[in-house]
Length: 186
Figure 1 (cartoon, rainbow, N blue to C red):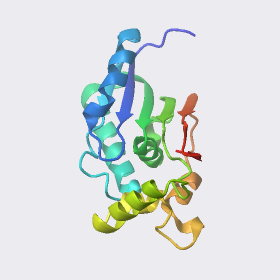
Figure 2: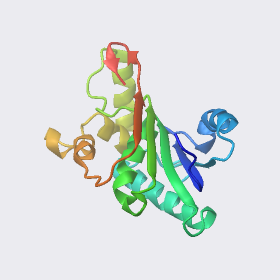
Figure 3: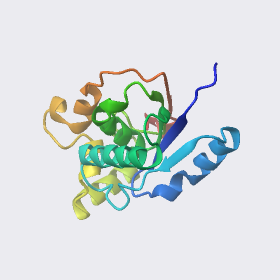
């Protein structure tokens, strides 16, 4: 693998009810190996993860665009990578269609425990009860979308639409890391 001249920006996106500091450990470990890498620990969705996933994607895309304009002048951006934890992975997927202008810079898309298939079925009645309480009590739109209860028709759910979203460019590397939990995939 040859040396790439220019800035490699890695965008880290936190999960549900998280904040930019949640991704600090990942950032610090990567920066030990890749000292010349620039990081953006996304903050645009802090205190806003109860809302709509597509809106979170737009906010992240705007934050990335603004960061690049401020910190990567001219053509200094060589690579653009994304790492998302949990809901952060879905937020990144929702942001990618809005970042077409960087399609030749896309390098890595990595998600850690992201519910790419939603969270429709779970064998734990305790978890199901907790989700129900959060959706009803806090009027949590995001959890309604994650459980695919935002529409009676599966094809009209946000998770389904996200799976069909058109991204007209390739990302050079993609990695999804999940674990099995209570018999269902997260």
